[in-house]
Length: 409
Image (tube, rainbow, N blue to C red; front, side):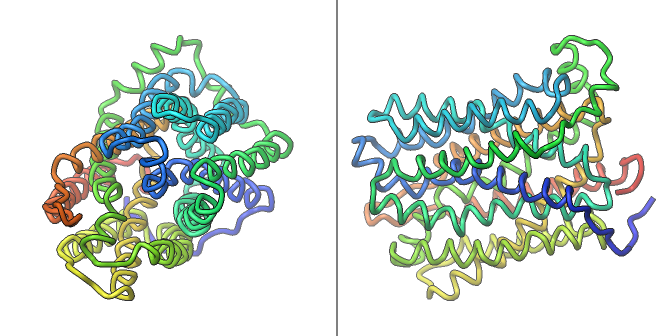
C-alpha cells in the first residue's frame, strides 16, 4: 500500500533518446507560449494595441488549446501516437509561422488561435507517450526531465527571444521557434518508433462514446478537479510576474533577462532532482513537501516591496523548487489513474483543463490586480492568498487520489 525507498533503475539508449526528444518538443511548445508575455512591451506599440487587447492575445491561446484538447480526446487513443504527434506538431509550426508574418491585432489573434489549437494538444500526447513507454518506477525521472523544458525555455528561450527581438523586431523569435521546431519534427519522423500498443486494446467505440466514457468515471473526475485547481493557483502569478518585478520590487527592466536566466538555470538542475526524489521517496511525499514550500514562498514573494536583485533571485529560485516539487509528482501520480485504453483521452482532457484553468486564472488575476498611475501593482498579495487556499485544497484532493490508487505508485 505504501511507497518505499528504492534504487532507481537505469535507462536504455532508446529511452534516453525518447526523453531528450520529448523534452525538446516541450521546450518549443512552452517557449512559444511564454515568449508572448515579454514581447508585450514591443508588440503593444508596434500593433497599436491596448493592455486589454494584449490580454486577449495571451489568453486566446489558452482557450483554443483547451478546446482542442477536449475535441481531440475522443480520437486520442485511436491512432498511433507518433502519427498524432506529427500531425499536431505540423499545425503548431504553421501557426507559429503565421505569428511571425502577421501585421495586425486581428491576424495575430487568429494566428495564436491556430497555434493553440495544435500546440495545446501536444503536451497531452507527450505525457501519454511517457506513460506508454516507461514503467512507473522510471516515470518520475522522465517527467522531471520533460518538465525541465519549462525551465530551459526560460533560460535559453526567453533571453534569446528578447535578444533577437531587440535586434530584428518582435516577429523574429517566432521565426526562430519555427526553425528549431522543423528540426525536431524531422527527428520524430525519422527516429521515433511507432507507439501503437494501446490500439490492440481498443474496442470499436466511436470517439464521442470514448470521450463520454473517459469523463464519466468518478476517479477521473476527481483527478480532473485536482488538475484544474493546481493550474488555477499556479497560473495566477505568471502573467504579472515581470510587471511586479519591475514596478513593485524596483528591479531595472534590463535585469529581467538575468532573473529569468538564473531562475531557469537553477530550475534545469531542480527538475531532474525532483524526478529522482519522486522515484526514490515516493510521489506523494514529494508533492506535500512542494506544497508546503510553495505556500511559504508565495506568501513571502507577494508581500515584497522594493528588494535587492540578489534577494529577488533567491526568492524566485526557492519558489520554483516548490512549484516543480508539486508539478512533477502530481503528473506522475495522475499518470497511474487511467487504464491504457483511455490514457490518451484522459491526458488530453487533463491538458485541456490545465489550459482553460490557466486562461481563467489570468482573467481572475487581471480582475484582482490593479495598476496604479505610478505603475505599481496593487492587491498583488491577494493572489498569494488565493494560491494558498487552492494549494490547501489540492493537498487534500491529492491525498484522496493517492489513497485510492490501485497499486501504490
